[in-house]
Image 1: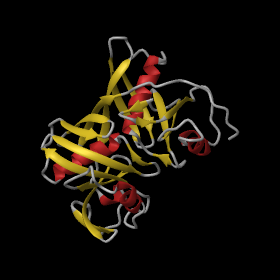
Image 2: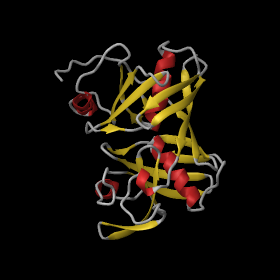
Image 3: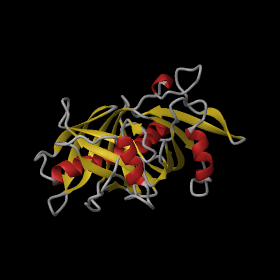
Image 4: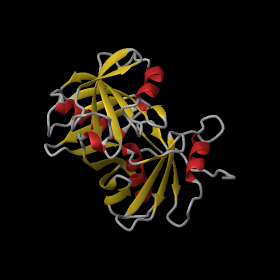
Length: 276
């Protein structure tokens, strides 16, 4: 399944336990020798919510949260008859998230609104190495160039950089330098944002452990929060974030609670034999 081209392999683990998911994530994510994806997501039982989502990046590292992935989890559990409700809760490493499912004409889930929880600007929540309580429009030296960076946590770390032209960024060169920068002891997802107007942002993203992806839901949320704190967008206004894979609709309320609206798409089902 994919959300705006941010694609994952999903495994139903409600009645089975998967050994070595880190290794399996690397195998299935390989676009030449595996299935091909940005990572692996397991749908598991939960004692705290209706279901649990575990998400692994293409390099095998486990992530805390994935906005595009959680929408697809919502689609899977409804379309497969695992729930009859269109309002459900999913447990993640970043906490429990609430989903509202919208059905298409064929009765399957076409889009999902997710309460993504609160964006945090606290440096310790990201974490980012700084003497300040937050890291808003602070200069960072990367490959001999100074970038103004705003850091946001959506349960996972984000560095948001505003620039004039995202289309011509050498993202494959600078993305890894941000991801592994010494200021980010746990690595970071980096969003490069072009301001179109106060209700529209254009975004490219370098995801920790996966590289450039077509979309990042938590990154879109973090970017709108960063745009608000930098006085480019407004609280309680729906902002369209244009990504390589399509658009997400993001609303950040005055308490920094974030709502995300976007599609979820099933591509195919299949079997793979693994020695892992």
